[in-house]
Length: 448
Image 1 (cartoon, helix red, strand yellow):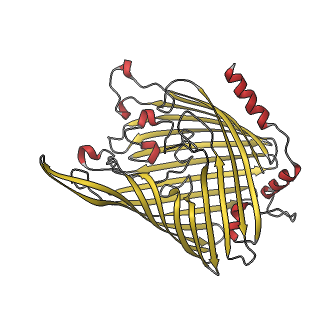
Image 2: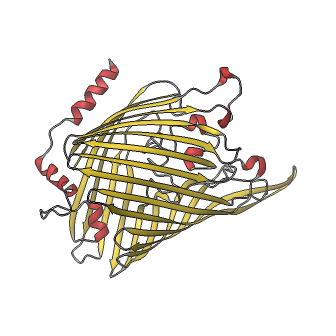
Image 3: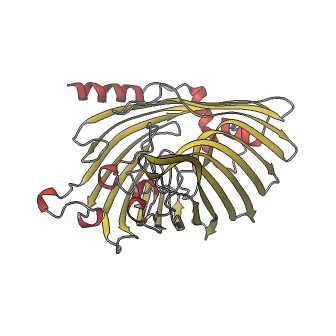
């Protein structure tokens, strides 16, 4: 009965009346060739520093069930509503603006903040130079090298097709070597270069710092000293968005990163943190009237052994802690108190699918559109790169999106992870073999 009431409440909220004025704002998603007036979103307002006020927001409500994961060991349904609003005010002189993106997160059996501040900053711009101070987001959920949502100061030069960005962010992300601490601050230089109408190149130089205390000697003759471990990642991301024929497009994102570490364990042993990370995402899409399809291929490779407690060698670790990052539908939990993934119960010791540590991931996805309906399928295969290439398991994904209008949409997801007992270090006894992890989700969103 309780589950039925939860579901009924969600549906009543989802199909509630929509203000026509709010629906009008959704016309921003219409064709770029349209001559009709379409108001800017708040993010566009502050990015372009267009004088005036803008707002947009939405309500996202979902119920979901997860089985045989660390996050939910047994079957239980969770009700998870999110209410979100973004506002921007750029003053008349167009060189000073304020931006806020705030949400009320839901509840899913773990601790959440009452109000979650995604972004809240002031921006000053003079000609090509700009400065932003406050809570900001860097990178995106598909990025291998960068994904932060923290208090920061950033500055740069917007030169049209070129953007030179520097930032200093206070953060809490897991260190690649897992010595018990967290990287507490990151310095970044992330320039972007537009290469014509279809290509772009982004560079990365990220320096993360972790305070640590080293203890040496044998009790009672021990001594301690404070030092700072440093993780350095350098790399680039090439993007291609190219039209193919009259109805098709080909998209490619190719990311390459090298990781260095100037670090020691708490016992004063040097850590070998040299690592390589590679991520490729390619997709072909075609749309003819109401029918369309998109097929994609995905490859992730990161080197190294993520067990420094054994041999002081750690794998390449992605610093992307944004909600939704990670492969497949078992991605990082939205708005959680920590960077959890649904697969932590199987892979928690190595964080392989969470932070791409010492893992090879191969994925194939396909999505179709039949008017308002968009079904999709995906398969991901995971394996170790540090343990003779043993298989970790296979993840199967299915999803369906129904766009009732530009304002209201419904969606459904299902995921099944089939682990390989030997590849993830479980006991060899068949009686102790890990069970498959499952996820089932139903939801809807209203945007304005």
